[in-house]
Image (cartoon, rainbow, N blue to C red; front, side, top):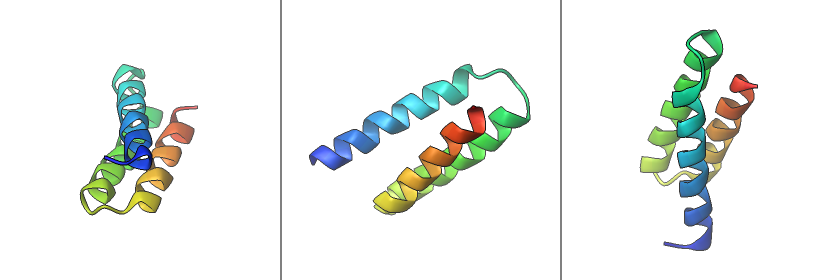
Length: 62
């Protein structure tokens, strides 16, 4: 794994944890949709889209 891949992996773990521990509600639902889109982008090796969706998930929880 490259350094960039490590960073994305760590960010995915952090966002997943934030989504899992967020209180139930609209913010969590929106964040989870973005997280799932990030997972899909990650499996397609689309780093730009993965990061975009992770940022959107983080924003949705704030």
